[in-house]
Length: 238
Image (cartoon, rainbow, N blue to C red; front, side, top):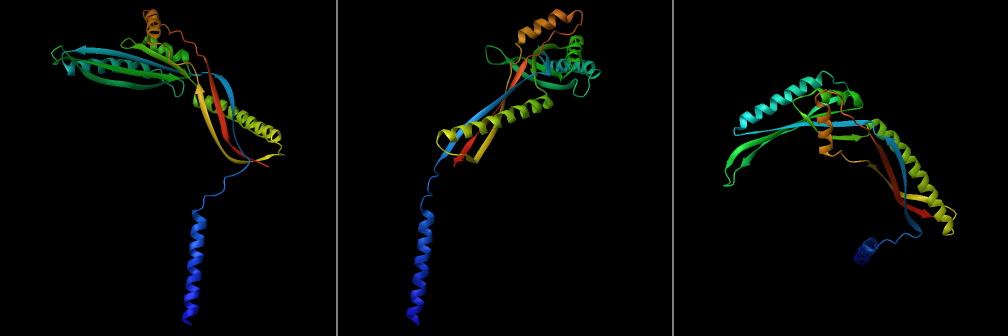
């Protein structure tokens, strides 16, 4: 009876060791797996304008400089809010802050600060017209972009194009290697928007200066944005 118990225990130990050995062995590398990628792209007219207005103040007293910035920003906000409209022209404040100004001996001899107001939306005429009426701030930057709805629309189209290109490429390569088809193993989808960068600050300020006296809208013109979607992954040839 004792010998039988020892035999059973030894068998269980061998079975456990065999299972552990099998788990520790590296899995066999997959065969006939192909890595590939394909892209789709769509262009769309930029329908969102982001206009940044700002002012800088400096003086010996920090509180006085801050008060001047606050007054300039309050005046601009009052003017801008009267023309605000959801998605057509939205108003928000940007950077607001002070920093010390140092003399040659390293001591603080004054303060300088900056305040910003950002107008953004689809109604270019409303935005530029409002910016032209604001006297306490000047335009420091303008940029164009795609609205969320426009980006989603072109991204969906580019994604469909990329998926179809991926499937066609996978079928073509499978036939080229002598296989009848493939099955999808894993895939990733990435999108990227490529568009002109922000307009140079000097150009924007010159445009504002030209229209300042008459409070006329600043001339702007949007460009084209390109949305690129890339589908990449692996397929099992069969």
